[in-house]
Amino acid sequence: MAQRKKNRNVAIVGIGQTRHSSHREDVNQPEMIHEAVKLALKDAGISIAEVDVVVHGNMELFEMVHQPDLWHVLGTGAYGKDAFRVTTGGTTGTTIAAVGDNLVASGMYDVALIVGFEKLQEGHTTGGITNMADPLWSRNLQTGALTGTTASKMIKEFGEERAKRASMMMRIIMDKHAALNPNAHRSFGLDFDQMDSLMANSPKLVGDLQLIHMCSQSDGACALILACEEKARKMTDKPVWVRDHITVHREESFNVFGQEPVEMTHHFAARELFERNGIRNPLEYFDVFEMYDPSSWWGLDWLREFFLLQGDEHLKLVEDKEIMIGGKIPMNPSGGVIASNPIGATALIRVAEAALQVRGDAGPHQIPKPVKHALASGFGGTIWTVLFILEKELTGWGDKNG
View 1 (tube, rainbow, N blue to C red):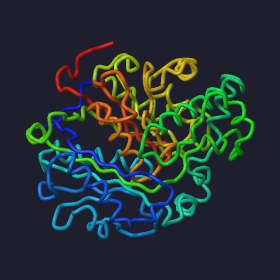
View 2: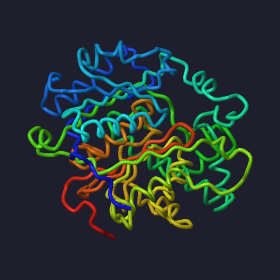
View 3: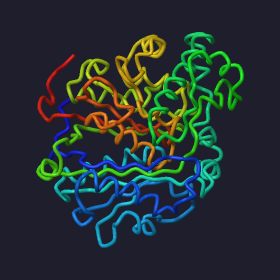
View 4: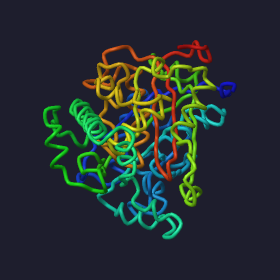
């Protein structure tokens, strides 16, 4: 399969992110969004006047504000500009990044401002989730990410002791990363010698999914500035190039009557994306991975899907601590979704954090080795996947490797 042909190269030239918290009562929605937008514009060294289009994304049914982008013009600066509002569930952040890349690559616009946010304290997330799906055909979706099926599947495959310990190892590693990130919502100071206590004492949610495994809901916003190559090279000496991205959807209800094996959208997206970009060994190629990990069980399981691994290779990466900041393939140096989850911004944060790693600007959670190739994922809907490849350099795209 040939590499996806882009009309113009596009780079991330500005990154802005708020601190994330369970309650940002010090600001309203436009004010919180403006924090991220102001930081992104400053990072790109431009004013809002130089932005051609604004792409806005959140889960509007969670705050229960219809067409929030109209109110948020006060924070985004979109007054008098072309604007798009996009919602695709948990994937929203990566979807709006893909929309921005496509708008700039197409030649329609030279500079795009991408804004994702959520202020979940002001709405009713559970109410939104439980009413979004058909009560008969899609009843299994109404818990959102709250499911114990992945845990039971992994326990059946690898045994209870090993699977549970690997999942808790993943959780502790993510907490250690979050402790390094000043924007993270949750970091508890967990350590590996607490593993047995956490496994025994954390409250159960569903099956073997415990409270400690699970992401929370957060208030926060993230903004990116995307620019065409000509303008990007004038704005910054550290552009992060959007090499390619892919979006894959699957409806759970299509498989409700049978038990036939179904390829996970994560695996399908990775397989297609790597093939068309000539990436034969993704584990060797990528320097860092920012994964949308709603729980440590899913994060553990999905390592295998995204890197096309076999058997227990993904468990070994976690057990050997190779996903830590100094490891073979650092995963979520930011702390990931378990640490911060402002849903409309969550997937955009994955792209933003991956870009910071490529630039070497992640601060205390910067990985020690140089980052040339980064992977970022978004997850949402009914097992939907969006996957991004970010690069430090334009040269060598399409070359076979690994």
